[in-house]
Length: 360
Image (cartoon, rainbow, N blue to C red):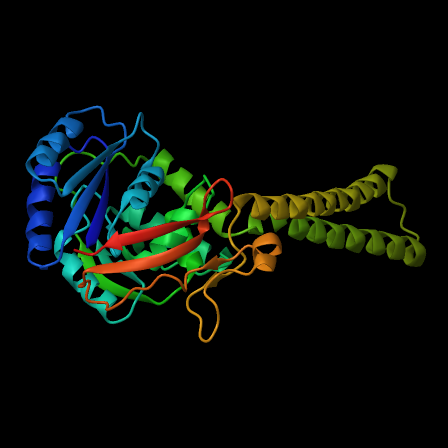
C-alpha cells in the first residue's frame, strides 16, 4: 500500500484539483493506496470538502486537528497514521506535482529507502530564491548532518524510515533535518517547481523565519558555540593591545591614560565572560541532546545476529533497531508482511507490541 500524507490549511480552492490529479496518478500504479489529509485548523470550507470526498471514497482519510499546530506537526500527525509500506508527503497547493510519484516509486523499487523530490528550478520571486539559497548554504556549513539542498517536504520514505521518524520523541520537529539524520539509502527525482494553483500561501515571512530557525537549531549546536569564538577573538585582541601598550611604555616611555588601560583590561575580561558563557552553553547543548531522546544509532540490518535489542543496550545505550522490519519485495506487492516486534513500541509494563501491516 502507498500512503500519501497531505497537510491542509485553508486550501478549499485546491482540494478538488488535487484529489482529481492525485487519485488519477495513484490509480494507474495498480497498488492499493490511501490519502491522509490532515486538516490543520482550517478556517474556510476545507474540512467540509474533505469530508465529502471521504464519504465517497473510503481510501480518503481525514485527521482534523483542534487548531492550527503548524505544517511540520500536521505532517507528523499524518505520518503516524500511515499504513502503507511507503509514505509520500506533499503539500496541498499543487506545487508538488502528483505526477512525480510514479518516478519516486521506481526509485524506491531500485532499493532506496528515501526518495527526495529536488527542485531544479522554482518559480518564486528573486528575494525568496536568494534567501533560500543563502539559508541552505548556511545550513550546509554548520549542520552536523548534511541536509540536501533545494528539497522541501515532498519526499517518499519506506516503512523502515517511517518507523524511525515516528519513534523520535522530540516536539520541536524539523522533518527535513530529521529525515537526513536517520540516514539510509537516498535518491533524488528532479523537477521544475510550478506556481501555486489557487489562493495564497500560509507561509508568511515570519513562519519561514521560524522554520529556518528550527532547522538551524535542530541541526547544529554551533549557535551555542559562538560564545567561544567571540570570547577567544576578544581575548586575543585584548592581550594584543595590552602587550603593545606595555612594550610602548617600556621602550618609548609613552604614557597612556588610566582609562585606556582599563579599556584593554575590560576587553580581556569581556572575552573571558564569553568563554564562560560558552562553557555553560556546552552543558545546555548536552542537556538538549539528552532531552531530544534520539537513539544513539540506527541499525539498518543484521547478519548472523539476533534482531532484538540486548538488555544492556536497552538500559544503557538506547538504539533504534530496524533490522526487524522485513520489507519483502520492493514492488509493494504481497499478501502480508509481519514487521515483527518493535523494541521501541513497548507497552506500559515493557512488553513488546506486535506490528503488522497489510500491503493489499
